[in-house]
Length: 386
Image (cartoon, rainbow, N blue to C red; front, side, top):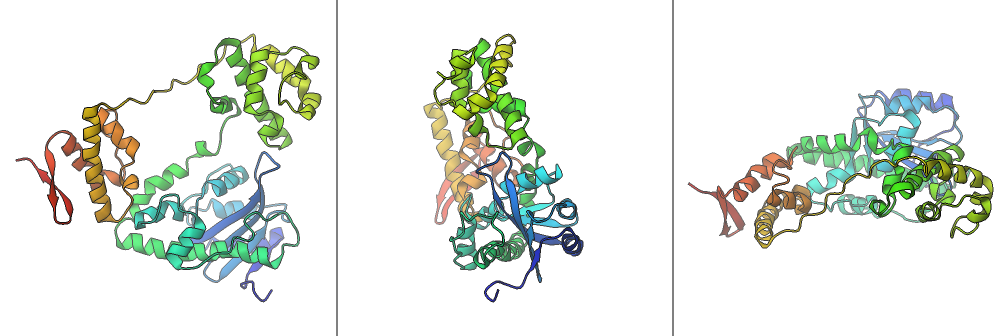
């Protein structure tokens, strides 16, 4: 493998234990995963890439039956786990360990504090920060294939090789600029268990326009959505392979009570009808006899008056000025929805964490008439009323 960086290919529990024992001595690890989820309910973990300095490894999650050593590494609080756009990786590791790995550092979340776009992709960040162009050849590769071709291994390793460089550079910059502590609440939010542990009984809330339905129809939607979630987990297939949301709604509206009537439900897959028709009918019959769970109230967005629009423009002007001074995106410093809440009185204390000391008092002073903006050579300045 002359073109592939020197690395370890870990395909046994014994080798994994040795690797993880060494990595647990390190202060951080760059980590990435390759997985498939098109054909299954749960993402199918195929490969885990890790790096710290000279230690570079691909962990073959398909070949290894016992990933306990990896779980211990992920949950070791003395090791920072470095990701880019961590949510999918964290979901996979939550399924593996039933906990969210912490502490963590996400370069996608950190990047806007250094002036990069919010939600910046990994390839773009590597290009802009490291001036390295990554290959996109294996973006849709089959990671269940064994043995893996050299080119796929190279592609996988590149992710953590450059991720480590991003982390070291960005962490140093943020520390120098006294911004590293700004990230703590963002990472804490990302590590909340409820993001990755969603009860089957709550899935109905994601059905489009669920507020339209009441009585038996709503109850059937709720119970069929729960049945679908439990069954999809049981057979490890995507939920939409069983029943799509629009099929659930059709079943709730038409309330079939026989296998023959199920044949008239548009878009209900034949294999689902034949294999699970009896369970679907039983779920419908039982659901129609019980009261539905209440639908969460949706607070309608308050239409801004002309006066509030004027206030919003005032706040936006200062947000843009401060963002320019801080060299970060205005939407990161004070999101538009938050500003709208402030001018309507719904979010007086909405700014929290690192944002509050940077701009919170300024915005409140402007809203309360204790300060005003003055045009200056370099944009705007904030002046306090005497």
